[in-house]
Length: 378
Ligand code: GDP
Ligand code: MN
Image 1: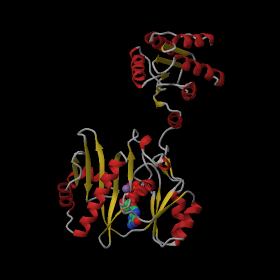
Image 2: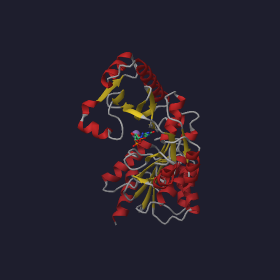
Image 3: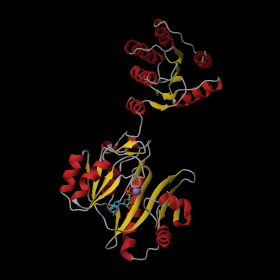
Image 4: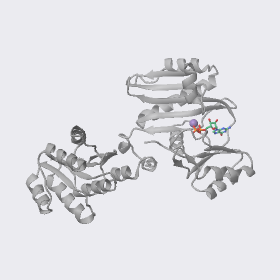
């Protein structure tokens, strides 16, 4: 889960990583009010869940009151790579002496936490990586050993930092970033730029924070930070209904219990020459309402030509699934053919309910998948 810059910075503040003073505004009026109450210059920053805002015109300096209207009018409503700006962060302006790039990221390839830094931070960091890779230092940190003084020494040597007060501040920032990375189960914590301002002070001017999706449900006191702005509407609905859902571009809509069986179902569809429209796992202990939510999401996809249930009842009860189908057919207007494979716990009761609906069911996964594929092929 990606966080907005202001959310990341609120967490930085909690972890004692220095940030500029700032306020979020949701409307132009609110933004104007904040700027009028501030000492100029201020910086107005678009809050969108995508990088490269600076280059896209999403970060603007307001030096005098004359700048206020043009800056606000150009940023609110601006489209940055498909994201429309509807909130801004207004911060005190900084006199930047140097821009540094600093991040920690989860490195699954070598099972380390990789610290990445460059003295050439700022909006051109991608070009630095491409054209001058030596300017970038990567240190792999063993999570069992943690951040140690030899890491600091390599870090200071690479950035050419000798000033003692600056070194203390860097160590403070590095430790707190690393702590936040681990405590909040992050995939990435990035400050670009981390700036040195007059008086040799370090300040995090930007934040990019990505929390591991699997950790999100376990984080305490973080509800205010959960945002679904970068998920599709269907993915949000699926999530709030307790379903695992991934949109694909085939035409066989799948409703399956269990992630492994859902993967196997997609494999078998492909094997017989079909294309799944989605991955959907209703999970164990499926109550009928989950089936209704699943059918709602799948029937909204115009590509879907047939709906395939593949239920192997263990904890999931076949009669719960069948009741879900029954309730969904009563509530929703479903005209698509429904193929049902149903076997396992409470199979008899389930099959009886399906029969009463005038639908067929089979206990064979292969038969059900073949039938679904042949129907879309006709
Ligand atoms: P990004 O383009 O989405 O990464 O947005 P950033 O927050 O990194 O801002 C882009 C650039 O705007 C920074 O690299 C700085 O050069 C500049 N910038 C941001 N805040 C300030 C500020 O307070 N004062 C000045 N002079 N420049 C700023
Ligand atoms: Mn940045």
